[in-house]
Length: 219
Image (cartoon, rainbow, N blue to C red; front, side, top):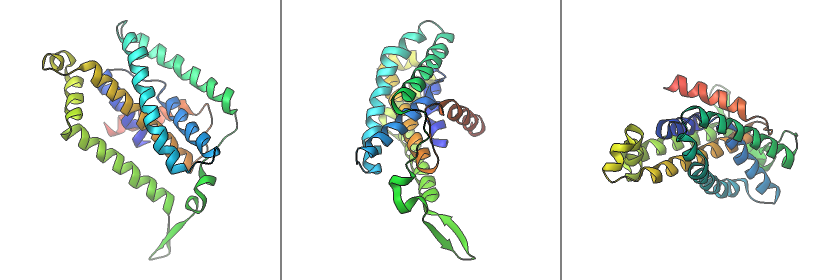
């Protein structure tokens, strides 16, 4: 949920858009991984392939949909992303059906393996790995925003896009990059969720609510 919230927060902070389809995009990423696993792919390879593809989806979504809706005010992006979420939900239902699915079987022993700590404390390996991956992703995102050229451009565009453009920063390019990262994070969060729980086509809105809660609590 922290990774999902990071993507939602990035989208709002840079593009000033509350993406109501964010949870549904996470489900697209999760079902894409499940589809590749069903073709015989390793779940880890499936995730590595899905993330850049979803990043391209985010760039296209920003360039061809979101950027145009922003010209019409604040309300239209909300309505468009709400409609996009409904479209994704019904599309996933039409392709994959209503059956709940999970990546647990593809992970094999990792899904139930555990470590026994002193004092007979049992800690699951998958939850620890999920926590470590989430922390690593958030730390990497923080370092990128603080030190990388793209990160500085994103922070500048989020503060004042017009002033950033006058300083030579291509605001449209920065917005596309931010959207790509946001959707990629959503896909990663969806895949991580599918390793520990079941997912279904209409789970996106619940994920969106959890992401909103994380954003509000985390600031």
